[in-house]
Length: 276
Image 1: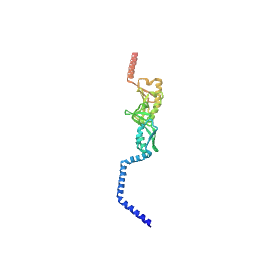
Image 2 (image 1 turned 90 degrees about the vertical axis):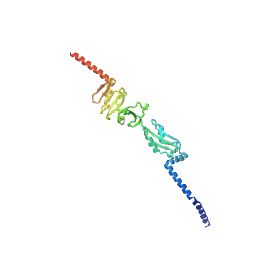
Image 3 (image 1 turned 30 degrees about the horizontal axis):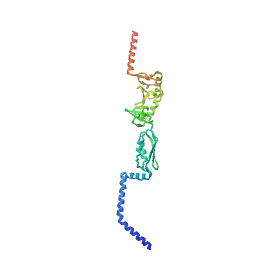
Image 4 (image 1 turned 45 degrees about the vertical axis):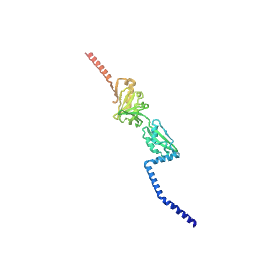
C-alpha cells in the first residue's frame, strides 16, 4: 500500500507541473500545424523534402539518356526538372515522361529511377524521311508525315521534297512513286500533290511531268523509257503530260515554240511555192 501511495503522489506532482504548460503546448501545436499548411500551399514542402532525402544519399547524381541521335540532350534533361539538390525520391517520372514526349523528334520514351541516385531515359526517335513544303514553308517529316522540325539543317537537305497541302499524309506514297523509275530518279527534284488527288513530278531542270490519278507509276516508267531512247527531258520542253492513257502531250518552252512556229511557217511557204 505504501508503494501505491508513493506512485500516486508522484503522478499527482507530474500532472501539477504539466497543467501550467498546456496552453504553451497547444499554442506550439497550432503554430506548427499552420506552418505545415503554409508549406503545402507554397510548395516549400518539396524543397524541404528534397533537402532531407538528398541528405540521406538520394540526391540525383546522373541522368543517362539512351537512344539519342537527333534530339537535344539538354532539352530532355531540362524537362525532367531536377537540380543539384533534387532528391530521386521526389522526381515525378510520369510527368517527366509526358513532357519529353512533347518533343517532335521523340516517338516513344520511358523514364525510370535507379536507386539510390540515377535517372535513365530510354528514347525511340523519329527518323527524318522527307521534306514537306506547303505555303512556302519547308518542314522535316517522318515516314508517317508527322512534322519533326521547322528548321531545315544541312544534313537533311538531300531528303525527297514533297509539295502541297496534305502531301505530308501521303509522303510514303510520294517517295515510292519517285523511286518507281530508278533510271529517272536522279532527275526528279520534287513530287507535287495536285488537288489532293494526283501527283506531278518536277525535274531538276524545272520540267513538269503531269501524271494520271490511276497508275501513275506506269506513266512515269513510260517517261523513263522515252528519256532513255529519245532523251525527252533534255529537249527544250516545259511540260510532259501523261494524263491521257497511251498518249503523250508535250508543251515546248516559249523560245522552242517560237522556233517551231517559224519552221512551220517556212515549211508552209515552201509548200505553197511548190504548188504554184
